[in-house]
Length: 511
Image (cartoon, rainbow, N blue to C red; front, top):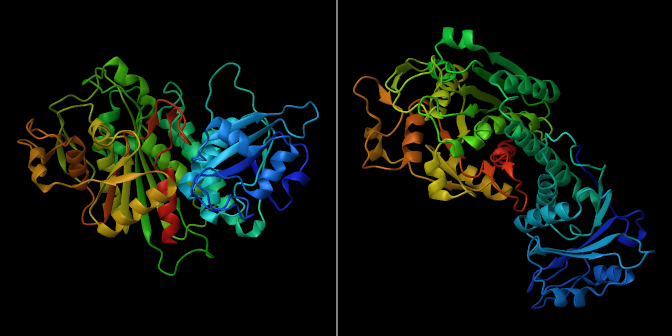
């Protein structure tokens, strides 16, 4: 579906024509200002600014009376929808849109709420951004684009319209860059969602590699795809082992971004992003129950986020060198599948004892991490994966677990997550748990062997750490927030594209 067009304009709402929806901002109780730059006084209840109230009254609406009647609070994302009451009304509906304290976090919710209320309306106009900071404008646009996302394989897909959103501000120049960055980021997250939501009968490792090649062509990236023969010849034992139970063989996808001369730093750091790309996960011979298998088309969400991040780097003017690796395989049970008790050799030579074939993600990641460490000489490595149910049990569905070997890297990612809406929570790499990965027959076991110690997400991170050498490294276990069971704010049901926004914010901050 095409993205809405965002038009920054100084034309007052009363001067715009052909509007379907007018959204007027409502500050939460106790906040000064009104989101329209016309000096609403501080008060204990929700406030509509003087100029916006005048617009509402011109449409036959008493906004203060409506807010009181509806017991509205002006909370972020709260909406009061007032349909046109006259046949000759200038607009079809007016929305009183809660923006809370006007912060980026509040504006992201407001943008999402307006998108849902304005779905399939061709012309929307709002003064919401009029006296807000540029970062709030970016959050508003991102929220609008993400809440408006839809994915369908119905024979008759939902109708859509070419939508224009007029953003009324005093100085368009001060907001244009923020709005443009919001559009680029929103487009990238929607790509990550499309990749995650594509049914597994379409989405083989080869298909995912084809999508990455299309992205590379559009985004000016170098691309290399390793097929199953190359993977076996070069010693990618984890990818080969996980993929050998499927009729659809594994792939390693490598995307490379070099910044333009104008944005490149004198000494350009090299960041490697690694994503888990399990296109469907049955658990292999350690077969999942049916209900746990149903959402497993999204088990490549980490890999999808890496492809999406790479798609946006040039448009955002990121000034550092970035390589994206996606370790893609399908984990299926068959006569050729790997078995519990097998010993495999990962890239670089480390041997691993397999105890549970449903812990396959860390095996494909280990190959990609070791390859990055040994061959790509990065300054920093970050991986993300829907890796463990333990992370979801510990943090729920709104936070991802963050593990890191470098304090500055951890702090930068936490900050980027908070700013972007992809929230992260720092978790410890508990050294006392490392012994639970000891193996009697191999260099390491890939799952915790001591039933007295839980910490499944921690031990998975400790396993991955074995393959990154001494380089600064962070691991994002996104198993909880990578998929959603219902719409909420800017999140839509299905694959969420989690991690895309956080990584883009972080990379933008590097240069």
